[in-house]
Image (cartoon, rainbow, N blue to C red):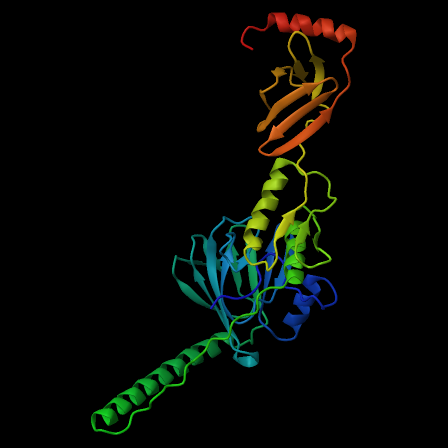
Length: 333
């Protein structure tokens, strides 16, 4: 059973009041087991609900922590209610600790209230369990084992009666697992807003009036390449669970404002950057950007399908003469 919204945000109801963190805190206060996730001084309180949840940085995880490797880190299991509630963790990746105890891959540990799970620079604290939760878990396992033995004895008895000609049950009651509710557009929008806040992007995620899309970063300032990649990772992790498409409305900026020191347009177009190098159309500039066109007073650069136009001042006549001298000394460009 896998259930619940993804980290690092908090599941939010479309009719709930207050921030996602406040709503999750209210549910935790009401007695549901919760997970307090802290990374880089920022904290989110999550109430995943009963069931088994994959936690990590990958898109296949139920609870996604932005910044971790894109793969499952551990499996969190929550069961019971009230004084019968319990929790356990199973290490999937390497480097998982419960308190000071290292868990090897595949190793499982019962969690007490307040237990701390460490993975990289992230701390996950389990809260809302009864103080005797470890005792309850052991007792539950004993009761489950006893129930299993009784069930086995019952099956053997039924089998023996069948061999003796006694009527066997014609139909065993089927056990149906209750399906977890699918996240709503409102909960996904709240999750995206919280995730981008924790990633340092602070982008709004808003549902369109007709409710068919979630727009991310509408009217936001342009992002640099590193920020856009962080956003793409968040959208990839959360988008698979969204009931409506996620539309990235952010723009990409090259960050080359003020980079052009001078420009020449004849007999060939070129610019001189603040780094002292000369660039022509088609050259790579500032890492992954490529010069697409040099216009009078403008530089058009491209990265993938994105373009950015950088304005710069026209060089003075004296600067043109200096550029001719610079060009005449170059041999390799």
